[in-house]
Image 1 (cartoon, one colour):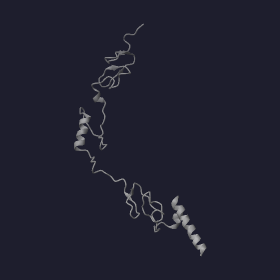
Image 2 (cartoon, helix red, strand yellow; image 1 turned 120 degrees about the vertical axis):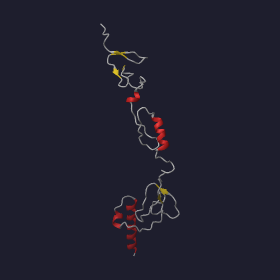
Image 3 (cartoon, rainbow, N blue to C red; image 1 turned 90 degrees about the vertical axis):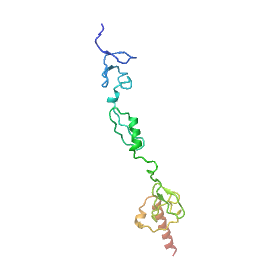
Image 4 (cartoon, rainbow, N blue to C red; image 1 turned 180 degrees about the horizontal axis):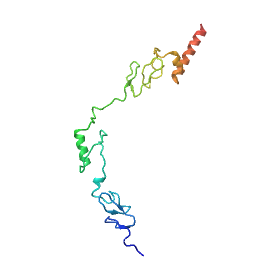
Length: 170
């Protein structure tokens, strides 16, 4: 026994499948099967009314408002020509800003590499106190130096050992 009034045929011209649970397109109000209910699958002529997307400028990453019926590519192009805040020559931020304090060295680093003894800023090559002829004179106290982790703490310990040897030799 067939049920001729049950279900609907897909409105896509190439499909026409009888679907018992058809989906109605909210833009063009036609019935479609599960394979053709998306706007792109049935090439809905009214998709622009429902499928609203805000284009973003590829240069300055700002959303660009568009009115109904406007073509997003044209609006973005006009934004780039008139209102875009992206200026490739002007927005050049310097990344390597920390210059080495060693005399004669002109290298710059992205991050500050400060010496714990003399508080100078050095490049990777001259970061060790022996590499930049460190002259201790920073406002960091000796007590806080001994608490510094890593190389700074080890160096202050070696200085204490040198002082101890100097006192023993006298």
